[in-house]
Image (tube, rainbow, N blue to C red; front, top):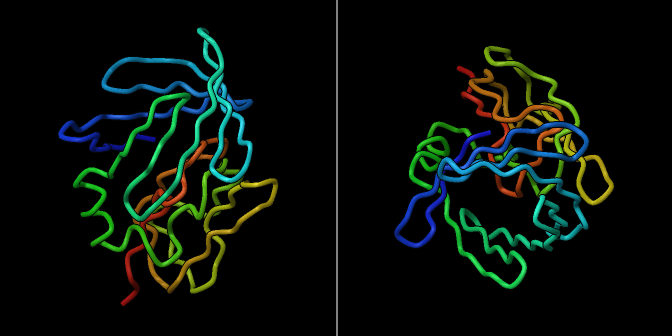
Length: 164
């Protein structure tokens, strides 16, 4: 999954690729790092890389993410294209991950017509399964996640075009 985040005046390109078994390839501004991520609940994560283990805390506030990575603090904000997705109906209305977690099932595909209340994506967070359901009837424009992928709270998982 690719995303762009503003870090102060700088925009960072981020890509997370699930490798299975809680492992991910994280690429930030072209620099790759393989990590293992374990959710500790309540926005806390244990991140293990070849150079050691660090605890991470992520607090979601709208488009902002307050991130503590070990002793470092960051305030990240979604870059402009996320706002454009939201205007098209991509996010909001229940189409965002409610909290950090791991996608366990994707039950729809782009182009599929869905009805209000239909399950779209299942997410495991805090040792519970959370279903993200269609807030209205419409057509799936894009699915932004895959099974096994780690997502942050507030991250758009499905783009839904309103039905006519």
